[in-house]
Length: 401
Image 1 (cartoon, rainbow, N blue to C red):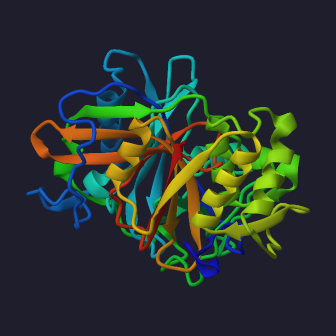
Image 2 (cartoon, helix red, strand yellow):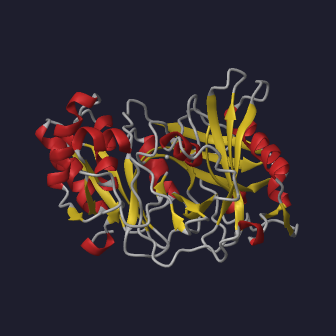
């Protein structure tokens, strides 16, 4: 994303949702800088089982077991509040999005199961108050009362962080106020009748895995503003500027209060060479823009210098999990830019932590996750970094001089 045509761009015609990570500390069984080898297969690459249909009830048990493994909450009382089937853009059943609540019905995190992600885990969070991307859609659109209503709405996932609602009756993607979207030409379900769409097929070896958290580190003191708040306060939105602003809050060079949000956002916008584009389906009156990872990083360094904070960054055209581990362990943060299914546009997020998970039955198999923020909600979100969704992945790693 170092050129204009590779700018991180949201807010386009299809109105797809861009999604959010958690926080942690401590290290356990292996070197905190160790990273598990990525797999070229949809699952871990170590499975001996065939793919089988995954029912909603089995998905909830799968998600609950995973949640307990990573959160350390084996003994607490919690239950699933929502379980929504997630489809690919061709109508293939990918998995499920499962939210969890405590006995007081307060959200305590979620797990997104995706057969195309390594070990069938796409993302997760165990933060108090954290909800899944799909539940965030529910909250932003009260008229959509039941996303499990297969007769009208279905959830479609087109990459690791991009979800959308498809209105089967209207044969179109649903506009959701306060959200930005990524243009995905040619994305359409293979049938407008969800009853004919494929079942969720999964490697059942993945379902029965148990996990150890082997390393977990993050930095504190970051302010996570939502897209809707940024749009309301500033009248502008670019995912790259939002990521840059989040990074600056860590170094205390932008305000952590809404009152100072507009000034800092405009300053970064002006420094990041943002390209404004027309978004007729965006929030009325909001200006949308796109920029690149290098421009975002330069804007962070330039604005921070005016605040008396000297920063530098290393740009990686192909960034690795271990790059982020080293960055976080040095008490710094980074930016990540991922291409959306190989198209010119992409998405940008701030990275402020990591978590390594190890399969108890196979120590060579694991999940490398990053704690990220991209404006979906005000809560952090854990993304499986070993995903094969992105054709291009670059990053900027900051350092305080």
